[in-house]
Length: 195
Image (tube, rainbow, N blue to C red; front, side, top):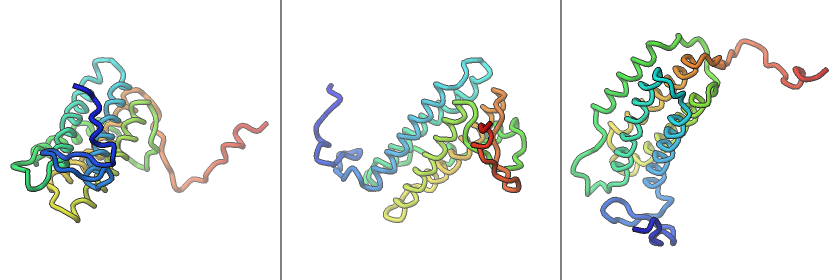
């Protein structure tokens, strides 16, 4: 089977069950952004340290990747063809349980966190913002047609999970978590390097 079909050369793609839509349709943008988040999670997994103390994080993220395929299937299936949903309240509840477990080992937050730190943590922060973008697109799509409430909740919880996982990676790798203190004065980085 060839990877290319030429069927999308004119700017259209097929939803599940063959319904043709424009490639810039909101539905396509939503599941395309979910796919982007999934790829970004793959990068974060690749950047995780290989020690056994990260097996749990690898497992959580791999489960999320599989879930995101289901999110994509839900979004790519026309409403009149759905006979059930792939993302359910059980998936949302599992994310909440994972969040609680990971957050229990993080230090309490006292300020905003600058995205960054260990490369895997930075990738997780990036994925969090991609997930938020996907969530915004799904909200916009929900104004035009029915979108599962559980799917919307899932994306919302997922960005929370990615945030606590990024903090966890920074803690486990002993990276200083960069913070934002709105009370302190901004420094001029050029002065640091002047002689």
